[in-house]
Image (cartoon, rainbow, N blue to C red; front, top):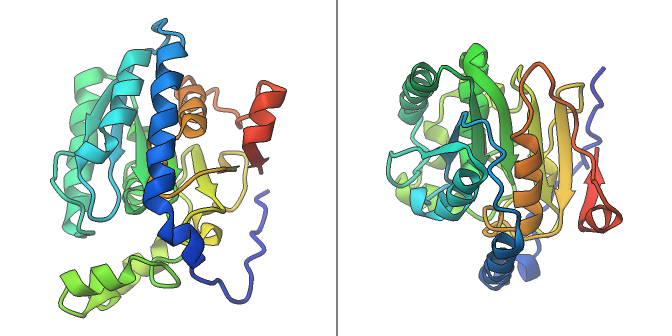
Length: 260
């Protein structure tokens, strides 16, 4: 039985404080990632299964390179989406379906999908269309609860689309986006997110859907050591043995605020 998210009547934009410090906080998280990876065990523990990582709005595969390098070191086969800058083009959904099918045929293993911000919305939709090819979904600060309200990137979307913004999105797609994918899903979010409201980044809880709140910025999700630690744990599981994440030490419990 899924838990219903108690959404406030009015979800506000992230505070200006969190928004104005996004770059500096992300830089700090990147700095912390370097010693984390240096002291992290280099033992290859992954099973080599494919992991497709989708960048956020206006970002490219370059933004997800540190995350993909980390997963490669663990023994997985990571891939960028290879479609250039993510402008939120709906046509990319069809291309992603094709990519997932190619990766499945190449590795003979189901694909893990990781999406950062808007990329998380893309991977959830991909998993809904071809769940039989998907091992699990991990979203990083992805506002699938609502992509039209209270975020600090909507002005940029309107600028790129000549003022049309969300009006050019298929209405049926808008209605479907909040619905969960029928595959194991971990939604990682932060209440210090300065770009999108954290309230919109949470799944409705079920046996295969979990929300994990961490400390961090929106722009730093892909380099945040706390997030890397969670992703490393999640990648060990398949559809048949997937269980919800649990902190393995008191130190982890202090860094990970909530595990719903």
